[in-house]
Length: 578
Image (cartoon, rainbow, N blue to C red; front, side):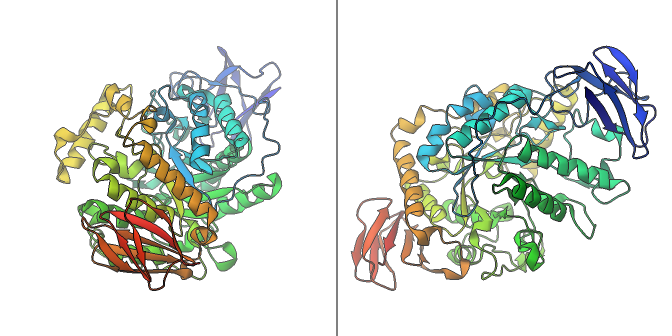
């Protein structure tokens, strides 16, 4: 027997469309409409009939949308998949290397099954956890995933629900954890039918992507349960090891107990039940470590948050770019500040925002592994006009310096797919909206936005052009080619070194010491130090103590002289004092 149920507190009547038949449903006092149908097993198509719509609507909690987000839902049996990961004990975030990828562009086929074939590459690289950009259903065949509308249903073009489970199962078999990017701050612009059933949207608040989700208004308790149930579904039914929560600074939530706190409590309970670590990572623009402060210390209790300040400090030093939000970054003192304290803006003036921003991090309380740091990510590449990667902007020498500073930092390093071999393929903003008016609005809006920020709009590719999507796919022949293989080798050696030296994975910020001079920086990590020369000329740099050996260098010609090291141009080296 299948029980069909849908929350529609202010709609009457609600009827069930079941393979062409229309059946009456019964409303409960809680605003839920229910009907038991003995004959409706897995594979049955269904939808709901509302008085104000000419055609049936898909289930807001649909687990399977095989014909797209506008069509009928299909009954899916979550318990039928033959899992083989019963011995999987999970992956903890401390000490981990993350790898962000987009299923649609990670391989030529752009499916979960095709991505499985490349997991061994990640294992050989030294990755511990794979972070997938959003995979829930959106309208169209391909986009970044942040236009999701059927939050409970894996996107059919990627392979649907069983294929996602095959991917997770295969990752676990190789010792890889899986994180999933989820978007709870807005619905996408096409196919979002949940608000037709109930008050899912905030009546008075919006964000850059549309109407905000109703987290604190009338009947918001059920909306919050909708989100929490979705999160627990990915972690429980799909065996996912953690979630990256998109743009939590866009949440409008004035409840004393916020959704983030409520979610952290529920996930910790599930973690205790399944016997493996479950990780919540926030993307936040607030520079407020209360998100990742333990609940016992008065924080929200999330495990980590993305740290854009680390990216900005590295990117501006390596490229010389200073436009927009990069304006306050670019100095060696700025890099030293973030390496020692995670945030640059920590109750300090932000010229971009024209106000003070952020809160200082308690370096003795908050370990560095709770900050996810990166040289590149989907936003920082894809939201450039041409989607050009760092490898297209700087020399191979500086690229190696940046990788060394990232992978020896006290934070949790995250790589963006293809970064490890300096992929030449761009990663551009792409969409496939079927509606001509929406497609035109996205295209024109993106060009207008870049034009307002001084970019040449001729450099902005058409998001709707299929070639934009195709250009963004990785070229898997590159890793073995000259100019790419040596970068891949360096990434492998850096990750192996980080995992072999306890001081390089030690997360305590209070133990990090940084000094710098004219285009050089030195970061002391216990018994190790990382020296980086960012200039176009050789430099001799003080290490303040005589090291025993050079563990790794990004180029030949590095020389030790007592407590000093000579670095060729655009070179970094890791030394051991003992």
